Structures are given as structure tokens and as C-alpha cells.
Image (cartoon, rainbow, N blue to C red; front, top):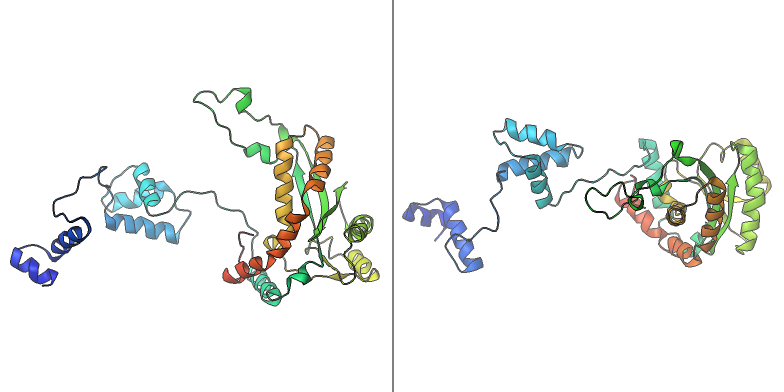
Length: 318
């Protein structure tokens, strides 16, 4: 007999009959099961409402959800709202910072991934990747966590010294290929096209020879104004260097970013005390990065292309 027919004979709702039957099938019991905790004060309808709200507007705050529930006739604490969202698989996280992508950037991003999706791994092994980055003296250290007891926050072991303006920083240019890391150069002053050409002449070409890239190697750099300056283009043309076409606003396509992260983590562990010490540590730690790490980045580069295509040209985790 169906739930509705059975319910009419017993004078119960069809939903009640269905719940009892499902309980019997699962637990072989018809009595009310003991609860391990108090029932949630937010009804299933209220839970669906706040889930729909955060799905459409992920930046919604607990206060916003509290006000929405209150207008609907349900007053609960913000802790209850957080518990309900966690029960449905959501948790509050810091939003990732990604480049601002215009429609043209997204299309270029997607086109690059589609054009190079089927490139063999051997082609990527011929690429010399390059980039610049800023290394702060107290960079990653400023956000490190510690294990401590309550009211022990002022213990020197549980604090991180800081200075105004971050203690200073240095700018670095570096390059690598599937065969390993090579030259790392500190940039002094403001870099323009002429200085960039000098850096390439003194560091890129020796790096290519040191890594034994052979013929047919390809140079990669992004679309920074210094990289696209007339002086830079003329120098690259004069040296007959093949340059990989690169979409703007796409750091997630450059495996170089992963090595910068690796370097910054190592530097934070060393805790340099001044800029000269910072430069020395950068050079040492850069040279220590295993060639296997570089080879693995290049080997898995196709996964990055697949991720870009799956995300329709938007930023990815890479």
C-alpha cells in the first residue's frame, strides 16, 4: 500500500508514514531515536534560505544571515548559523587574491590553453622561464602561526618582531628551465627597457649555456611594459631569440610563481635580519632548489592548461 493510502487508514499524514517506514528499514525500530544533541533551531526551510544566499553571494556575513532569518521569524545566534553552514559543507575562508581579468584577458587566457594543450612535454622542456618578484625582509614571517597557551601572547617566543614599512625589500630577476634553476639577479634601482636588456645579456644567455639548452630553445617572459619596450624587442630580435607568446594577467600560467613561493618559504625559515643578509639567503636558497622540482613543474604543465579550459579562462589554483 502507498504512504497516502496507509495514512488515510491510520489517520496520519503520508510524510509521517514514510518517515516511520524509512526508519524501520534503516534501524529496525519505530520508536524515536535518542538525540546526541539538541535539534537545530533553524528549520530545513531556513537552512535552505541561507544556503541559497551564500551560494549566490559568497561574501555574505553572518550578520546579514542573522537579519534575514530574523525577518523570516527565526532568531538564532551567529554561532548557530556558522554551525549550520559547516554542517552543509561550507566554511569561512580568506578569499584568494587573483588578477583582475577583463573579458579580453579571459579570452586570451583560454586561447593560450587551447593552442598549447596538445604540445608535447619535450616542447616545454625547451622553454627558459623568467620573471621578477619582490622579496620583503619580513614577508611570510608576518603571518606565521604559533602554538601558545591563553594569556601567553606576549612571550617573546610567541611574537614576531616587526618594523615600519615591512623592513624593506629587494627585487629579483630569475630564470629556470626543466633542467633546474640558474641565475638570480638583484635589481638595483628602477628597471627600464635598457636595464632589462642588460640583465638579459648578463644573466639569461649565460644561464642558457650553463643549462645546456641547445638549439631551438624558447624564451618566456610576461607582458610587463619593460618586456615589451622597443629597446627590449630590438635586443631580442638582434639576438635572434624566439619568444613565447604570452597572455596578459596570467601568473597562474607561469610555473615560475611556484618557485617564487618555494623561495619565500625557505627565506622565512632562515629569518634574515637585514637586506644584505636577505640577498645572500635568496641566492643560497635559490641554488638549493632541486632540479627535480623544476622538472616536475614542467612535466605537469599540461594539467595547468586543462584547469584553465575547465575554468573557462578564469584564474585557477595554479
